[in-house]
Image (cartoon, rainbow over all chains, first blue to last red; front, side):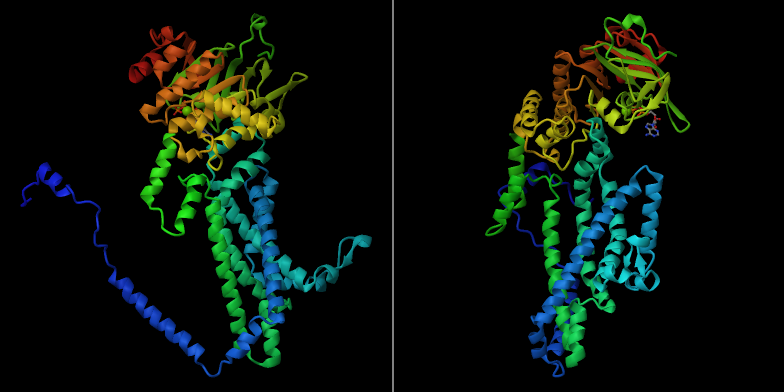
Length: 319
Length: 264
Ligand SMILES: Nc1ncnc2c1ncn2[C@@H]1O[C@H](COP(=O)(O)OP(=O)(O)OP(=O)(O)O)[C@@H](O)[C@H]1O
Ligand SMILES: [Mg+2]
């Protein structure tokens, strides 16, 4: 080395009385340029849509909160909720079956997942919708009913979306369950807890932490996938928007109406998802609930810094 | 071999009796005929090299592993199997869990439930397995936390505790089930050296209170001071068992000698 080694006194001198560090952050010029380009391109696109004389914005605004569209939106949300509930329930059961020691349950679960993930959702929806063509009656002999009574368009939509979701959810839940530390499961068993109790009280709550983010993603995907049911004449958001444009011929305007609602809903769901993720992080971040609350409070006007937070945690652990 | 215990135990039946215990994982025979007796209220430490089968034997005692030869009795009750008309039948899950309540186990990695606070960790099994009321369970949990020196930590999550504190909570959690025997599998091996003492102190207190304990440990000092007996395992068999002064102070078996020369 050409420069002489600094002596420890020099270092001490250099560090003395320097106070807080105000360093110059590393700049990322590439990012700034790319960002600017994207903003310009996006602005131009939006501008061209807004100023396009062919688009009748009053039609968009008129229909955005119109009764027909709102009813369609309600149907979309209802479909999403029911299909997700069915999917989640099925997913948990299928995952538990898949991971059980019972060969029969394992096989049934794998077969189900193979079948429903291996075929397009649209095809499944059409199959359920047309079930009556091949199975005019469901049940046995006296105990049978007309298929069309059970499988309405809405029923077919629920079945198609829910059963399909179950297969995807099963894989998510399985991953979550497998992520839970085996030692805790053994500890629970050693405490005399039954398998079922261990699953519901120890494994699933912790699996949740891993499961929630992908479930949130699936929920958002589901909200968008429900638009497929418009092909089997379920009066969802897209179907209603199209029904209106079939009468007034403002096709593009009505699609914008649907787009605005879908975007709004996915945005709201994303925010809820973020809240849930925080909730299920309990016990996995080093901040206690009290600190968490304090943090939330402090986040509003002036933010609590990481060092302050660390101090709180350290104080608590000293107690 | 007979399933009747010999008459010599008629007066003072040992808490744990293992006879010719065998256990294989696939083709790997890990336990090759373990014989051991753990008298009521005594503390026995298991020593042995890595892979000698210490953990496996401990796990057989509370049916975390199923033995495939020999017998284990806890307080005269056959472990993992029941006998009907001279034939052994596997126990059902319900029977096994009922039997497990009699033994408490403490693991090397603590294994606290990460999503529950210290208090929740301790009251979970008493409420849901023993059917205690929440209030009873909490009262008892607080006593136990006091006993392990963590009374003020009931609201903490495991992640917020040091390893030594977590292990003491794990001990309290096991004690909350009022076990008759405590099994410890290297309870201090995952701890920083300065935290080992606090856990050993709790265990020493427990031994003094008359708890029957089987302790797998590499803490020779603890084995010498606290344990009534030391058993040395080698390759799935107990090659030497006796008082600490004899086994540690004057080992007879060549394997024991070479093991001790390495750890002492
Ligand atoms: N679940 C299992 N499946 C297959 N092999 C196993 C299993 N558990 C233990 N073994 C094997 O059994 C042998 C004994 O393991 P065990 O954990 O009982 O040893 P140990 O004496 O506790 O060792 P250590 O001091 O390293 O903890 C090892 O060879 C191990 O690989
Ligand atoms: Mg071991």
